[in-house]
Length: 237
Image (cartoon, rainbow, N blue to C red):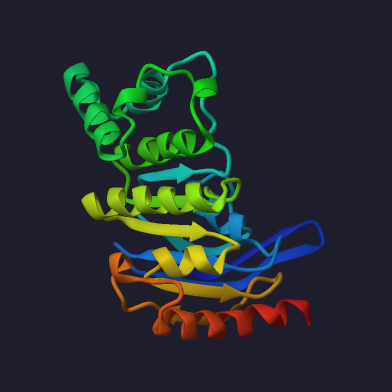
């Protein structure tokens, strides 16, 4: 469980959060929609500990992993070496470290790419490595900041499948910031639509269908998409 209680945060005269309260249930995928600059990434930074609130309380499990918009891979290291660099602090035993990396590479179809360097990988493959890095790290919370943003439709859909496979193998509490209603509908257990700053919840939506059964143009998701879209239209008013 993640809780925010009357959290306040401002950057100079710009108030981002004002008496912000929210509950995010454990082992659920929470998708967060909101206009650019409203404070979505700020929420993730507060949870990761890279930012501190001015006042209020935040309660969360200690261990957090993060998937950024950029893959942040080191160019001089292979795919496997990039994973080892981050995961060696969590897996002190080398045999265990190598076994975990091999397991996740196989799960995401990247086993044959383990000795390739980042410039030899496609954008989708690099972002899959970023997902592995986050999931293989033994965390309670997974924070995702628009990790599929730079990918085309085909690669995005493939990466969403990889993400869901990883999640189903090891469920944890996920906060997934996105600008895409489609991404939220395909992945989220709960979808939150927030206003511009100070960030305020407009409405939340629960998606009952299991992700593997969801069809973007099916009746239930189409109806839900239209309801979410009506909420996002308020951003322009």
